[in-house]
Length: 289
Ligand code: NAD
Ligand code: MG
Image (cartoon, rainbow, N blue to C red):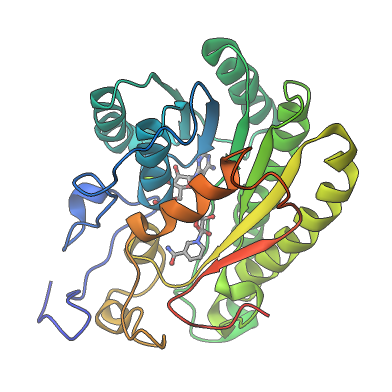
């Protein structure tokens, strides 16, 4: 830890996947601010990476809107998952915890089937789990096969497997929401492999929307800008944290809570009934076109 700068974030570093309890300052997931208005009554959602960061904010908002949730995450994130579960249960919704490494195909498919079993159906899949690696000095020369395997399997293979499996449980009015990124539009050189997955996720989103639209299923994506989550100190250099998010028109990083509104809107079969195949940017003003 060192001095605080204008984004309020001191230098800090963790090993992946990173834990919320080790972050300074703690992110805002809407624990004190999200007011439910019964916008997702009786719905059932699986959120991958729902233990922390954007996934936790989405889980809390969904729960307060009347939606039961299942959370997928890595076993070493159990403490984060239990914190999220506590917030969800306080809002009266059910929350099922499904630890497992979804870069393994059987695990990924099993998580979806178990979630649908426990929830009693599946209305929304949020493909939010993601991985990146930015501690690189020489650009593409530093990209290893192990890193590519972890990044492509987490961000793309798991999304394909879980989507295929979810579609066996989904009916009319269901929807899928994928996590894109500002990196799909304005890639950073140290994130060359990660950025490529996010561009692929945009392409996948519009293509799948065309395929499943006739079944009444919508597919969309959210493209965040720089958001203060465990992924950042766990995958970037600690010294870069005091500058994180200053490269936006709003001049600061976003909080996970600031993403939740986009997800609640896209998940709602009423509010977003004619919204499919699109990407909603939540970037602090950086362009997503
Ligand atoms: P986060 O670390 O809180 O969430 C990522 C989650 O992915 C982890 O909590 C973990 O549970 C899950 N995950 C990773 N590998 C997994 C595996 N093998 N098996 C099971 N789960 C696994 O960070 P976040 O920033 O909230 O990330 C959520 C999504 O948002 C990611 O897809 C990320 O690429 C995207 N995103 C984040 C930012 C940002 O600035 N934070 C910007 C653009 C996009
Ligand atoms: Mg986590």
